[in-house]
Image 1 (cartoon, rainbow, N blue to C red):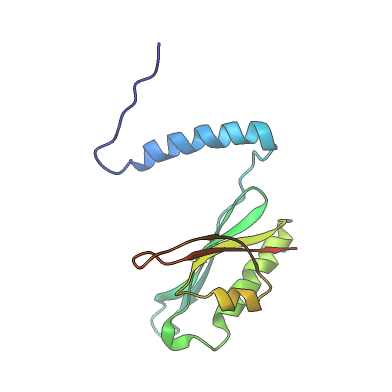
Image 2: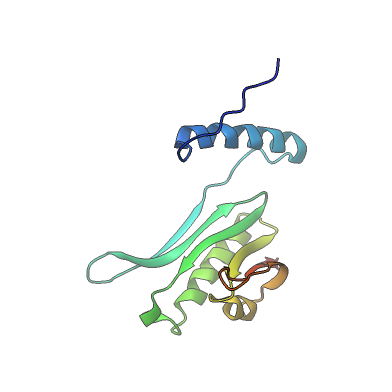
Length: 142
């Protein structure tokens, strides 16, 4: 008997998402030997007066690569080396964890030149149009 295909009317719950993800991780682990997930990585920028989070970096373990998912430095603080410091710390931790390297994606209105200066190299691109920004994929192999 075939399974029932259910199209959800709303966004999947965290439980539903995790059930699908766990099935995929179990399958992938059988083929890669990558069964242990390392913890995600967060590096925060805080306002020194209020302690409020004003920026930072968030990354995840992606099969022995560190995937930089989010990096944000407030516009008023850009050009002072904070983004480079966040990326250096992420790279230091990635090297300590024994990753092959780091990868990320960025849009044409974001920071591709910044990442290129840090030694990242392009490995893919999604085209854009008048309503869709171009998306670039970059990596840094250790």
